[in-house]
Length: 347
Image 1 (cartoon, one colour):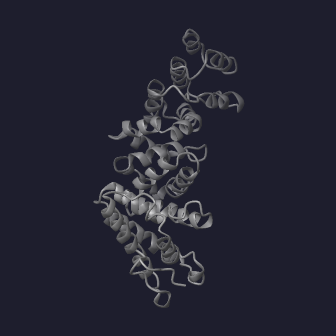
Image 2 (cartoon, rainbow, N blue to C red; image 1 turned 120 degrees about the vertical axis):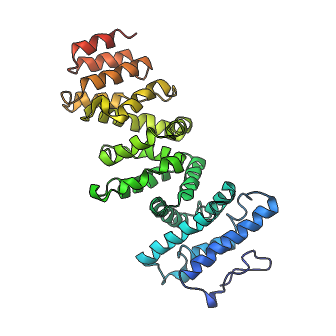
Image 3 (cartoon, rainbow, N blue to C red; image 1 turned 180 degrees about the horizontal axis):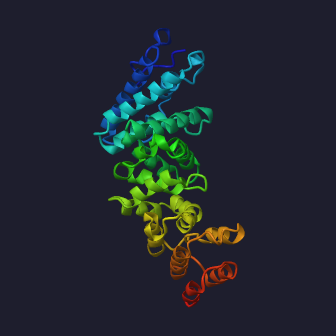
């Protein structure tokens, strides 16, 4: 059924009788996005909000010819090679528009990936494509796409777990891959290219499973580079990231710092200890979870006492650790006396 009626803005959409095959249909659909968004931005001299995002005929066209999710395309699912080709087409599409005003670029992004928001399966399929696109965009590269993703994540806040899902996928692809593949090196340029996106990666990438040499190398590169202050500032000033980093990420960095063989020579040692002084007051940085590991899992003899002392000292001075919690920890650990006395003297 041809859904176009009088005055439809999708004027050059092929009729079902002459529907194009992939990749021509996908290229045509993206051309329609550019055309309609261009008409709207010229008319209102700026992004036109939900006008094109909710353009019903354009969204049907994208369902049919870009994402292949309609009944009409039921027997024409993309094979793996075509799926990869689609991702490459999208990377090229956003790269070709990277010189346009960022607001216009984000408008294209919203039309393509957010036009079925709230519509269950249709939206989920688009987000699934977007997640795989994020992975390819790092290697392609198409850094502008990651800028749009960070803007979208900031816009939707904590209502969805998309940030964690995207970062989990990227960690699986670039950190958990065989070490001799060196795929983590593709992540290194991101700090200079997309520092806001990097802040999401820093917060959500660190787990007990993922905190390995590749991830530490990447984090150290980012957090000691020219954009380190910008990355940390974004973490501290974005409530969703701030809360997650303080509660879930920081203590794992402390645990690694205290148990790795690098001691104070570790680049991350300086970064983590500096955070105590620079951190926002709420939520406080969580160090207690690291201390619980030392006292409940029989690992108290494996930590570096000097490094742990630094963390306890700064945590007390910044009120991230109460005197009561400190004393309880000292009662159940074998920290040397030369470190105990200075800590207990802190009011």
